[in-house]
Image (cartoon, rainbow over all chains, first blue to last red; front, side, top):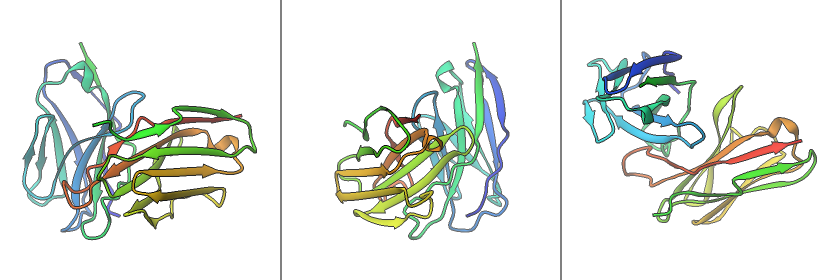
Length: 112
Length: 115
């Protein structure tokens, strides 16, 4: 499976935008880019995913580089509830059934 | 929608005992995943099923671990005999194959402590 690289930790202030980077230089043409987050003492939850084009949903935006070797998760206005571990994950298309391989993720701290 | 249901939420047992963790996926989902999370190893995929059939069990640590999915609404993960190194949080997740690729819905987890 193609691997991802994320910073170990990032900090933000409440109500400011947060840009969480992810490098995936060995991504293949059919790999989807997924972001999940895990709040303290909870199971992971889906945030967003994309293939080639930038994506927006109610939680966040996903900006994908033109060469697809990197992507950025954007939280437009961080809240205290956004403090979590954020995982960037690649999933293969075809018959992988959406198998997820979690790395260490980025610990996001949000200051009031 | 009740979400993914796991039981028990907490389990404390002694080394050598059998442990059974249970999972009820979201109704209509046809893929089910078992994960384990520890501080040392992070989140690891143990096994996953599609349409009740085990697809990949390469993450199962050893023969002491077994998983079954007798029907679309129930799965178990069994450890026998349990060892202290099995202490972890075990998550079950389900997804609907073919829609919103890879979006998995996770349960609240079972925290297992083996003394």
